[in-house]
Amino acid sequence: MKTSALFETDPNRDMIISFCTIRRAVGWLGIALPVVCYLGTLLLGNCDVLKASISDYYYTIMGTTLVGILCAALP
Image 1 (tube, rainbow, N blue to C red):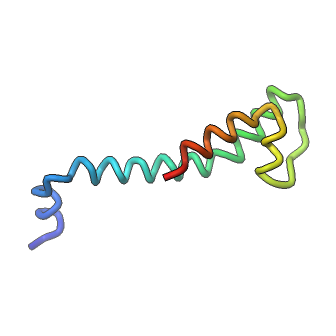
Image 2: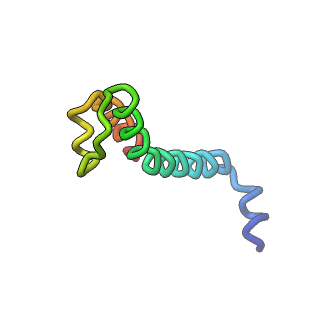
């Protein structure tokens, strides 16, 4: 039996697509996190220093954004 035929008749097909979409979204959040924190601090906080670690952004104006993205990315 072909895999594609099995996938088309699977009753959980919507759940599989949803799971893949969630995984993709978590990946994009992880990639965007350092960029969003740096640019947000640069534009909103008037701080042009690149922090040594992503955790240092917790103590900047982007602290709530950092926590929000981390909570959203928890599986």
